[in-house]
Image 1: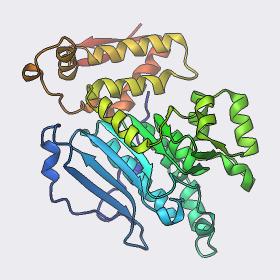
Image 2: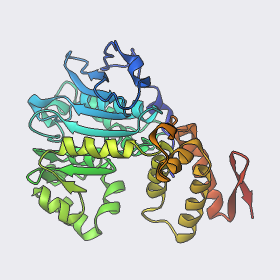
Image 3: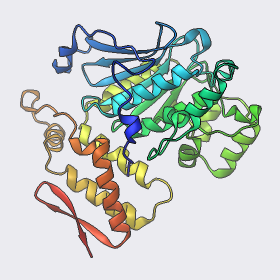
Length: 359
């Protein structure tokens, strides 16, 4: 099951966060407008500490789809320290927002992300401090800042879709790998190019690659650092589908998923993240049952059933906001339950609660 966000990853959004700029929202009330009004949006920006230009922006549509835009097009959205901070802040904010039904991540300009801005990160005046900030892991944190830009997308309890074009290299590729799905142009260039610098991929690739490709494929791509296009990425299983307009296709897919129950999509993500790799059958089957019990009889499950049964539109109930049990705090309880299962316990439902009953 999903792990909870570490304390240091939960409090770094706010007016005093270094490098973060909060745009004024004239229409924040639009989030409560009917889903059919898809033209109204709420935009939030995360700016550089040394520039007013936003490094990352989040645009929220009325249907619950949030579009995250990497906003450093003059540098092909390469990763300087401010970009790392801004991506992390955006992921943490979206993970805590129950109104988010799906997320699309894309890059502005000619590319998704060209990877690490080596010149900026290794600037003689800042290299030592940048290295510490990127690689040090605070007590209790599962990931460091370098890994957060990939790994934290997995903590968002809604599907995250990366739309890639131009180039998607090194750290940029690992950001895309952290998404649940990837839609790319046929000509998009990919590479795990850390071999070029004599280093290894250290931004979360070891978590996500085993879910996508065999070990020999990952070994070849990492050791050679070769560049390949979207068509090969699709054949290898590294992208979900190809599209000439990946952003439009990602938004279409996100809107389709956003129309489903937010509880069921959160449960699917938790289930697959918890069981897709290195999990025994007993754990998978127990977790399927436990999560299904949480969904059955809930408002959003009943709303889904009404639609599935063909109830007239006027009689179809609207979906409620995603349940609190899919937030990061609930993930800790879910993880404890799964550990109990592995130790011989079982999960049963008492009223609205899922509790542990040791065998």
